[in-house]
Length: 465
RNA sequence: GGCGAUAUAGCCAAGUGGUAAGGCAUGGGCCUGCAAAGCCCUGAUCCCCGGUUCGAAUCCGGGUGUCGCCUCCA
Image (cartoon, rainbow, N blue to C red; front, side, top):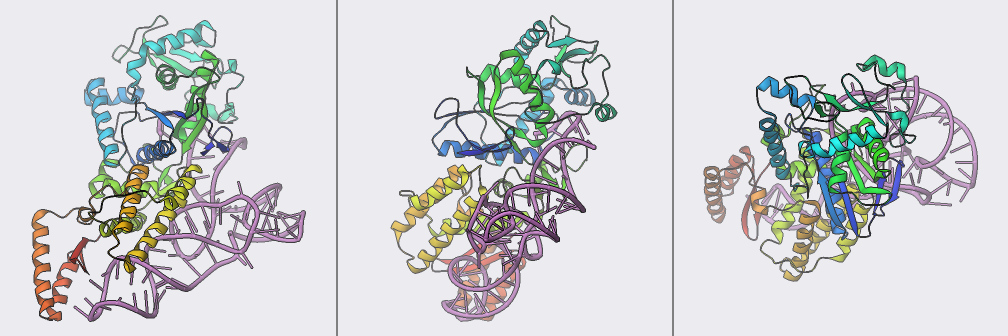
């Protein structure tokens, strides 16, 4: 397995801390609002990583956190007059439900920041004792000048003058790069007692603590892979790395992976730009699996420009897989075709080269169709194809549906009955060689977005679009 | 201003030195009562300029465009 490491800025061979195991920590969402397509893409990127490592026989421990205490959450609580718990549990559940719809399973461990307050207090206390953290009027800060390796992850070179213009500066900070570990709270805000002052944790501290708590290995590195969106590289991941390094002497992660953004009309989707496409709205229009396949279909590091047109093109590609699944319907899977499996895993082992993998799938489908055209009754062959498709269900999380149901998404029972009635009439017309009437009935259905296909097994139909 | 990414056919998109994967669309064909589906055939010299090399989309230098990070952000 080769992955692109953001710190080394190149593809490197994945050599886990412990042979055969992979400990992965992904930065999850701050739960104060609905998830958008960007969250989905990030989750999908590392869901793919998880699946591929498993297919390569790694024992994977996959952790994804929820940030459930934060300034934005507090604002929203006050706005909506809800408790912290009420607000965050709602959005956590919604996030998980939506991810399930996209075929993303829960992480092995899903820690919440508020469940690790003790650890964060202790962590900060150690940094204070080491004189790496210091106190100001509004909180405890991390002294970045105490970490010689600071900025070695992101390779940023920050200039004070420009930063000043954009950040509300705490003048008590020793260095402008220093960041808050703990924020002293106002009277009406959620807060936690601490020896160094009542308050709440800063954003970066939770990941360091939760990694230490749930995943930590002994030795030079605590975990194998730390992952998240490209926007987290700096300052979030840089700061996490610095905290852990200074506190424990260990590096936080051996490898760092970052996914590219989802853009709309070429611009990054973000809360501040107000151009977010929320997952709940997308899932109202598009099937979860189709959305999954679309968002997964280009390389995770590249930016992904969302467009409905491209989504529909992508769906056509998935349609082909399901049409093949129709052709081997009801056949039990036999052994997987090694000629298919091998190049698939090779492609995905190369930093998750999904484009190449999809090309291999297309080729497998094309060859299968070609063979089935010539040998429509070869059940032995069909069993192999069935096995290939079943394997893809695990590997990519696609093709899980009943193939007939897939093509009838969004059609209710009453409509189905009507469609089947018209198909029956048409079959009768055809039997009487009344082709004008048969074509007219087909035209009626076409207008309703129903495509007919006459096959040796009778007339089948699909909902188009 | 600092750091970084990216620029491949009408569109999406692989490809880090040897004469450009795949998908969609287009046009033609087989099949079909006609279709649909499936299958076959059909298209680019890789943003521009210069350099290295026997040979570059791929390496180096210089431009130009687009996007991102440096502020909460997947």
